[in-house]
Image 1: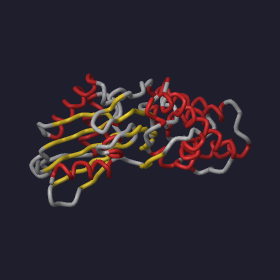
Image 2: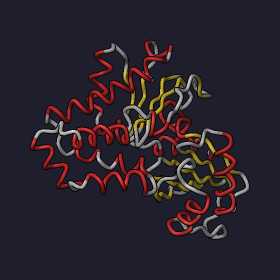
Image 3: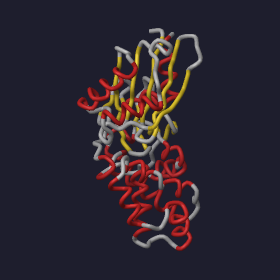
Image 4: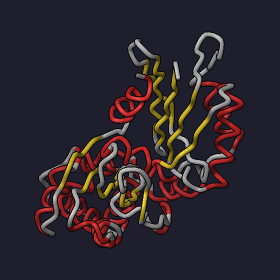
Length: 284
């Protein structure tokens, strides 16, 4: 197979890489794609604006797309049609973002694989296929430990008057003090999960404050209780993490793993580097 186009899409950002045998990988990015929150027209227009594609000049023989919400068979068909029409690539594979993390982190080895980005998920990966994947309730009822879950906690702390005066001022300087406007954006504008996750910058920039540390640890601990600790293999295999939240708060994950006497493996921000290595082996 001479060339492969690989996509790794979260709800906030999509990383793309064109791999050709004997040539340096070409990487680019667009905004995230989520088939549960975006229409066909929205995704098609976004790709046309952010990733114009000339199949004659940028020819690829195979496209493998990994994305949030893409493990659902119905959504796989939905995305397959959009991608095939836009790129003109007949051989197209659509997989969930969990498979991207598993292949990038474990390759052909076994492990418990976790995603902590805008959303959250975990599974047991046996080196070939995903087993025991935790159910996803999405950003409204689930995503414990993910960016939108952390964002909800931040918003609650501000709106309910839990923040001290220092963090109250920090919040208002970054996001404003008009709760009605914030709620309107949350419930009436596109991509509410991304909007909630945008509040996480406040946590990143104020590490060391006891309330910030409590929010991070409490939310990540919720992920351990609702997801990680439910896997039978958690105590005899390494835990691998992928995603912006996992990468940013790696120290808290290490502390929680120590508390639960669990082994922690690699923690990466994005699966793309691992996926490039995975597919380079197929090009050789």
